[in-house]
Image 1 (cartoon, rainbow, N blue to C red):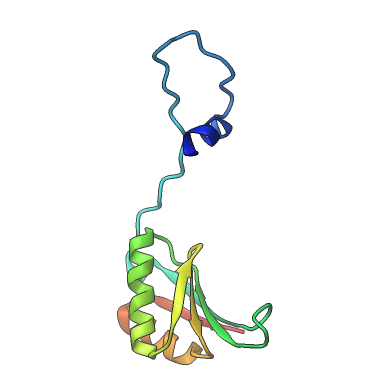
Image 2 (cartoon, rainbow, N blue to C red):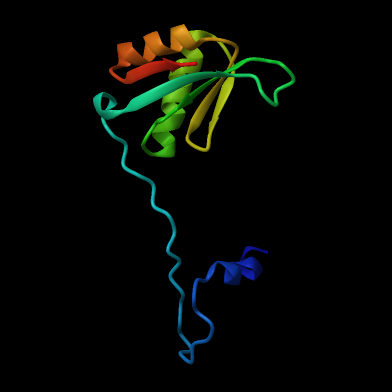
Amino acid sequence: MAKKNEWKNREGVVYSTNQNFQYEFSGESEAETLLPTQQYIKVILDKSGRAGKQVTIVTGFVGKNEDLERLAKLLKTQCGVGGSSKNGEIILQGDLRDKVVQTLVKEGYKAKRVG
């Protein structure tokens, strides 16, 4: 199935007479993870679209998905709650802004409570 939809991702290539032609996709490469002292992280409280339940959202992390997952695991462990990390954001259940900011600052990140 992936082979069938693969042709849709080709940018600008219509036809090639070369029998051995292999299109190279210009995939997005992950950004290198910055040092914690160079990161500026925002901690936000949100409850829109979540049936009135509050969640803490951590945004502004620049780096690889593995490092984002590692940071999410650290925050979930320190706060004792569930959560997830996707699309460059960490989502934690509940209003934990103060605790998250304290944990991030202790780890060396520049963190700020927003809102």
